[in-house]
Image (cartoon, rainbow, N blue to C red; front, side, top):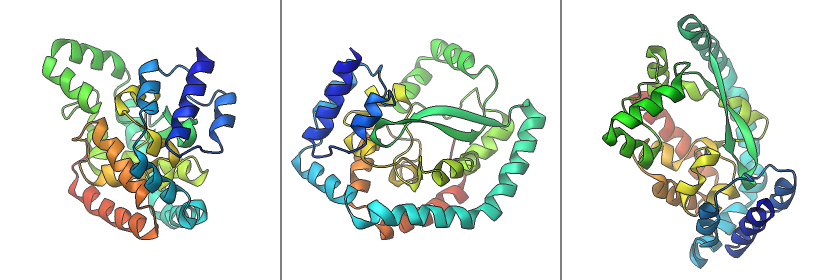
Length: 263
């Protein structure tokens, strides 16, 4: 079954014009999500259409995508450290006093399907999974909200300090480390959980680039849309990938964070 999933995934990416050089090696070293349900393979094989595939290929192979984007990431991360590090340290101390668990890591899917551990400031209680399950079982409306967006506006798992961090997206700051070591970019698709892949539809554009701390989806609908909208945003981003777009999205991120609308 694992070989079938790996071959089908590679064929799906090839059919869209996005046969990526690292995907075969990633599959052979079990970094591709080997237990992806067959329904997600079918959605990948559907492809994004000839026009979208060509646009994505252009974005992926641009000079900026090959080298300039990485240089921008490293430069901005180094410039941000004098401000970001004190915020991370202070937030971690407050979270330690509140719950004793200041940091959190989780598996996500990155470029070419490679798994990596994302780092965040912990914003949830210790028994988060049990609380979520009980909440979804008792409230059909919340279950529908969760199944649509994988997020809850009134999430019972969030701590008091965690809610403030999420409103301002400060809980995302430890991901600067993921950017520094090359697993993520400052700008790109929102990092996907492995179990969210079947909800995503066609994920060719997502797997073509590194996931980002911010991006089109993060600064537009901001938690309000489903996975079909996320997939479309990823296609739009890749088709227009360039320095101007990334700088524009970074500037828009500052405005969105200042509004404190995250949850």
